[in-house]
Image 1 (tube, helix red, strand yellow):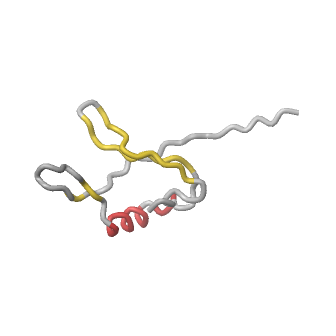
Image 2 (cartoon, one colour):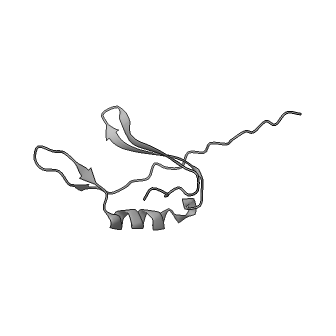
Image 3 (cartoon, helix red, strand yellow):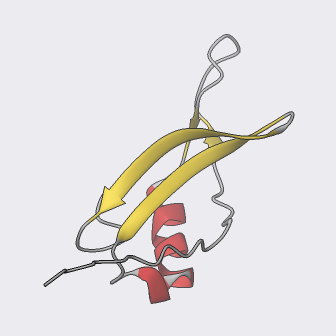
Length: 80
């Protein structure tokens, strides 16, 4: 008897995350503050209990560049 486990992968987004400049003139760093994280979680609360993979990316000249990839086994926002 075969156990064929198939997973359906559905893409949601993109979602805009507001960031603030944290670096100096010579250090081009950005941060997402706690208020923005809480606002984002509230705005997209239907994903709070979902398992899955998430990718944070930044705009690039020909699309986007992933800057963080995470896996959630309990909730989408487990790392925030």
